[in-house]
Length: 460
Image (cartoon, rainbow, N blue to C red; front, side, top):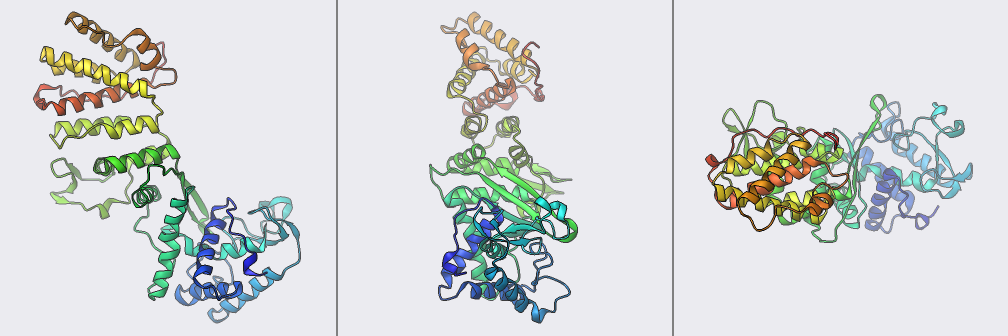
């Protein structure tokens, strides 16, 4: 098989495509080498530079098999690939790319998470392995250049050209630079061992290194190992709506985003210093390097599709209570628009209601009463009763316009499918912004703790 016959069109399989990405770039760096010469070049890196530390990728291959002497691992690997590239047996369709070709059986020695040849029940029709074409087998061999080590191994699948280019730079190109500098010792190591936090760091890097108002993305991190005793793969995905929210936050209010995320790590026996915006333990500052692999509630909720609006509300309230620098509500607006899919009309209505409530606060010089009414609403009916009371107070205070109309209430404030707690949290975020903007003394507001909301039926 000639190297120019290899297609680098995506197959949809993340492992094959990552290996193909690596092979395509490496082939471009060594245009004089044939395909077999490129395979030998990679094999020498694996054996002579990396000490064959690839059991988590290729289990039992000629490169990694423990009973194979080091001096014959490269020759045996080359014999294998010469056979693969010249085989004219088993015609059929490749399970990865779908091409019609002569197929080989690929167990865990040639691919990841695919079973072994002795476990025939693992494969279709009791096949001896995953039947793949020579092209995909070759691409798979270059996979170690396109992954990161994070305890287990990590592979990022991106949908945008910017995301794919970022991963190429992060892995393949950096690998080649280290090989050229004679500092490469194995698969590239990340500072992260927590895949969820790592994924959000990668997403932030893609956004900040490729700032574009058009950039959209869906990122999936495959966190896997092909090692004999612990074969495993976990998928962590940042869907497009969450990525768009992050893009807007990092483009327009990056300090707020990073501060918000930093406050939500799990760090035992420590406290958050609101004055200095840092974690401390026994009076000493804890650097981010010390906790970046701890669990983070914001990351976990966004990955699980759970709302972070309540956490945002606590964040804005704490910012006001501790007299920090004024923050606008843009980050919360980006979140409800992109992730919760809240309509513009509903957001504007909530702002309008917040303005009316603040006007009542100022007119009565009583900020506590109204905040207690809203913050104390832990059920849908309680929030509705509070709004009815506010409508009455607004009328009794001689306001020219109502807080909202019946049409606004029915069509926009509580539309079908909208969780009522999101209305309350966004309303509170807006009210605390108004308190901050108008420099209302903290002593003027309620010290009642905000209770968690409970979702109940419309009839409650």
